[in-house]
Amino acid sequence: MIKGVLFDMDGLITDTEKLLSRFWIQAAAEYGFEMRSEHTLGIRSLAAKYASPHLQKIFGSGFDYDTIRDRRRQLMNDYIEKNGIEKKKGLDQLLDYIGKSGLKCAVCTATDLERTKWYLSDIGVYDRFDEFVCGDMIENGKPQPDTYIAGANALKLRPEECAALEDSPNGILSAYSAGCVPIMIPDLSQPDEKTRSMVSAVCADLSEVIPLLEQMRRQ
Image: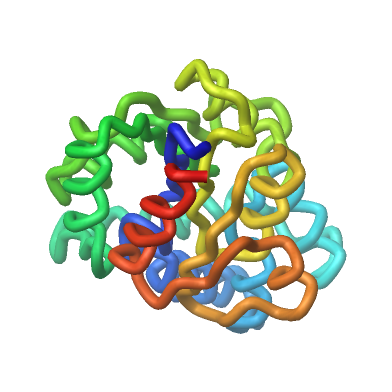
């Protein structure tokens, strides 16, 4: 029986994955690297300790991950301060359902805690989550299972009692490896065959998760 819901954030709660892609490409270009969308898709939800060698394998050892990431953050901060953040479709409906049903919920994200608070406060949902597990709180982030194991533990649940909502293959792998019940809500790309083999369902938006949770709570 499902007793908790674990949420990724970028591309799942907040419509920020497209911004991450846009500003990774811009920041890399400023340092002379021709980063493309397929490269940014490959690092979705990846912890820095995994994203850095991944990108250096593509672009060479001269790709200064920390410096380029800092520039990406600056570009993204400037954009968000001016334009705000968009929430993903169906979020409010799903959070309303979770609140009424008595389910527990947590955010499990590769993003650091300070930025997580900023984003979720900006769209008015920070107080609707019981717990937070962020990238700077976990030694081995996604795609390792630690983030989702910690999320379940924070809710005082077993991983198998938690539905894990994700938009990226790396996040799905993390949730699946942790023993959660992964549900994918694709954002920038659809799941490939390997990812589909790990998910219990694929939904078009967050509102479609509600009937799935209803069914899982009765099992």
